[in-house]
Image (tube, rainbow, N blue to C red; front, side, top):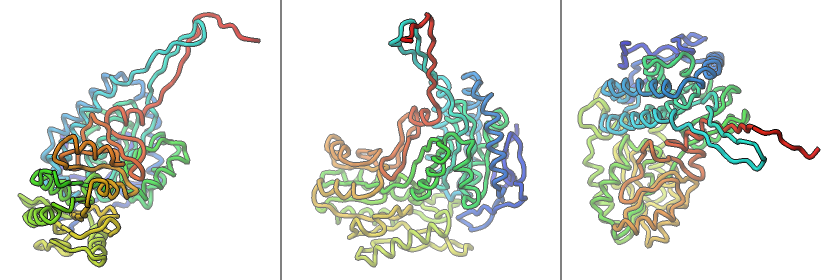
Length: 497
């Protein structure tokens, strides 16, 4: 099957029950390239009737797919993975056009990770094993089976649409569920319609995957709260996640929520500053800081604070910025003007509160582009924990640097947030870093590294307001499956009456 995964392909239809169809209302939504600010594609503007059709198809197809042999489900995932890897250059280009992802980030990070997640998902059908348990009742045998939950809703975000959709869609399908995928409005292709093309070409039966594109404000509640949904997997902000989880709970659907973060990069006076700053530059500025697990706050011990700020500033100023389509660019555009304006407002509020602007804090003009979305890498010093760029998830190429006197104060500052997603520690000795990591109230911590780490065979989850449930390996398998207890009474049982 010939696949056209280019930005110029026709992406204007929904994928429901194995068919490409227009939205019921016949309307479409423009998809903009954040580098050029030009529309490059149009996608269907789904209605609630389209959403209902998608769930009806998923519920019908899911019954047969749940009975498919493990080898068949595994084969489909492998076929999809082969297609993903065979079209990796096209997909990287599509991510650059739709998500503003520079190839260094989207090629080396997003596509590679999506492939890793698909490969892990291919092992799921053979891992769906039950157990045998002895009984307290004579002559009884207890069998516990692991079965698919049914219909899994996946609501994916715009920042890393490919791999953050893959980590939910692929294992859900591999476990025998049907899926309804609602991608973000900004990235409906790489977060949604691309999956329809890949799985269709891989031979997935009709109705097992359904993709509905449209505005969250118009169909989001119907997707999150659909009565046919058994699991709702959502990645996004904490405020939206709370609404999605509440809608899911109304139907007693299982919510799997990966939400916001306020991740620290904690550097003590014993750290190797070369390594700490290398990690800091990547962790703050890759994909313009638009990563839920990127560095939101730099906590640096006072004795090395000035040197750290000066060196981080020098590195930030050296990063090539511009269009995601230009060779060598490291920092590309923000996804849209609302995100850009919010992060720059955080910077202004932080400066008004007494912080110092070391570099950045403004947009970078691009030739031929009105109202550029590129924000210069920004370093802020003299920051305190309660300033806007530090206490809010700024989600941009912004590095607020906060001083601390000793490790106890650093831990107190690090934990002074409602979030608990990821973090990193540089303390010279791995053992010292581990002892600090143990004290951080967060779901993931990386010693002598930076917070942006994700491996499909390792659990990925947050604490507190950063979410509920988990992704990867058996964590997400448990979210999209249920246990069923069957007892077998082999001998006549005696009852008390």
